[in-house]
Length: 138
Image (cartoon, rainbow, N blue to C red; front, top):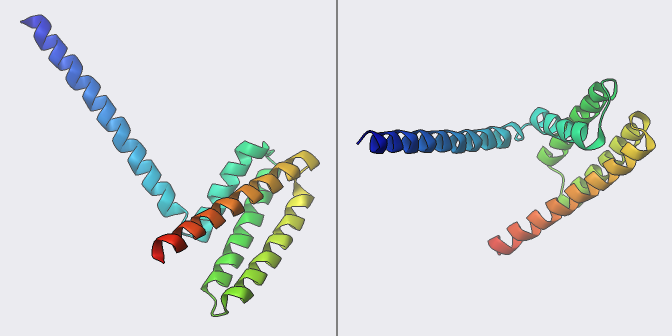
């Protein structure tokens, strides 16, 4: 009988740990999603991604964070503006060009090349998401 009780306690402990881990990951994902709803949250998330993928130095990190925040705020203003889609598209494209110029001054050649690849990948994901939303809504 003691072996059976031990097995039940062990099983309960394993299930408790698994459940707690699952709940923690769900909460973390929800918090990440909430934090990217603001310009500051988007800038921080992008900077963290860049820190990892581009191996930013301690000197580069705050510079990149400032650039990301500046353009996240600028782009948010563009999105919230009353201009038409085409005008917003042109403004966002000009904004991205300005951001790239500033990033080029901070990043080394290899980092900047990786940065451009990252931006292209993010742009493609955004296009794909937009197409999927259009298809679902139409």
